[in-house]
Image (cartoon, rainbow, N blue to C red; front, side):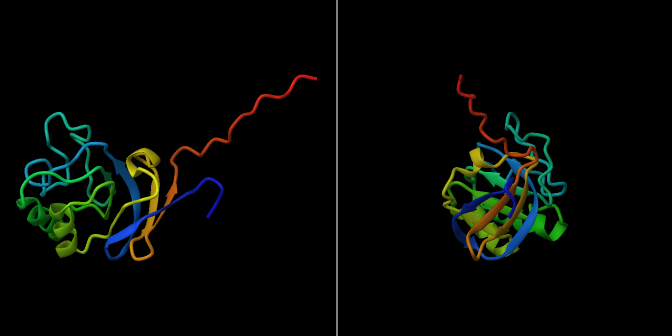
Length: 152
């Protein structure tokens, strides 16, 4: 680990290790109608990730939403090579969890910081779900606090 990296600790939801570029949303996401399983693009009108491709990325999101068909869409995305490499969630729920289990997508949740605030799109993520560790290398280096120089 370097000085410009951040370590987040959480709990394993689905086993595995993954790395890649983060795509972050503070909104819930639906894989049944909100993501094109053929391409990996988010298609939900008005969603903050509308038009963003999540294929092969580490998807950092608040929670899932929608019907149970979303689990099967996630699995279909895995078979097509359009699925995210991993999920980091603030609040896990059954739809995305089941999709991740059947698709073997690593998932971590319950982090010691809100991942939608601590991680930015474009950051590089290395995660080990079994250990509950997320290593974040910011796209923009972390800035050291600039303290005023006392007057003499």
